[in-house]
Image 1: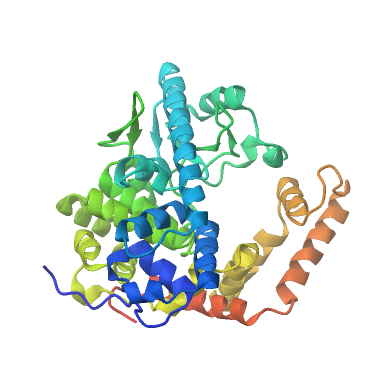
Image 2: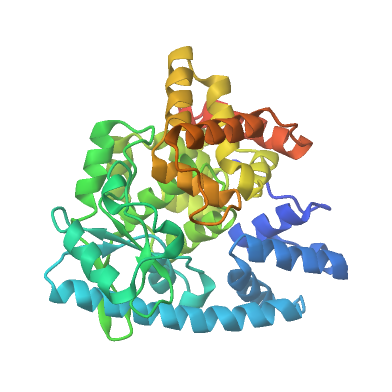
Length: 416
């Protein structure tokens, strides 16, 4: 086995955030004394943080499996709720697959469905906020009409016409047929706005349809991407799109996939080289335990360590200010032309985007200004007020961590 640099896992007294991260990526590495030292308040804090980070069911499994830590009462209830929800989502997946197949619409279930029902030991360990489905080119409108008739639209997205969201990767979500969970119909697996070469994006979009696998959900064999495509999508989505702000569930997903279904080594190495993901893979390797790093097929010399403080700051940043932190990091580091273009894109948006911000700020639907001039002035004032408000120390730390992470992500593998 290749000798990698040590993964920075803190076994001394550490913040609750660090403890949750370590339990998600390498629970066996966490010393029992570290858990035994938690008082009632810290136990509650750990459960609360796991719940907000959408990894409470998996935390329940990890702690129950260890056998050296009494499972907090709150986790028992969350685990049971997760079991029932996973069953309900599984039924919805099987139903949607049958509907699309009967209509002759080719499709692939992405991300959470593939991970939960194939790579985790039990589907309930991996919570799902929605169902992501990639639809074959030319059949998107048919699929959307079919799902919209079956489950109906979602009220908070009613102001967004489907035809307005064709420059990203998916349409506004609709309800699943049983109204159990939102469904996002994708016309691309990846956003074209990501900082990846056009040739790499095109290759991945074509490759997702090739060599698909099947996952058994109930009585249905649901199509999902093959291992290396799912892994590449997971890395790009978590590190380039979300920049780690989707929390420690990202690490649990990586470890679950790499341990359950290590990608075919030759195909994986060829895909990484063709799409230029070497720097991203090298950074991901530094956050994972040794066996998962081995499955990534990363040369030890190319591993670039992301320090724990950066990981914590990005994974647990306040959700309300995530978009603002991203913009501020871009304005701080981009060239002047890119800054002007970014400011224009953020300020001069569609009425649907203005309405979304109006509702996000807590205003009731239907109360937004009728005049586009007045509406745009309100929006600009809101954005400027957010930008120039006094930031907390934790937000400043998050901003600096994001700038540092972006610098590492854009640097050649092995460079600090």
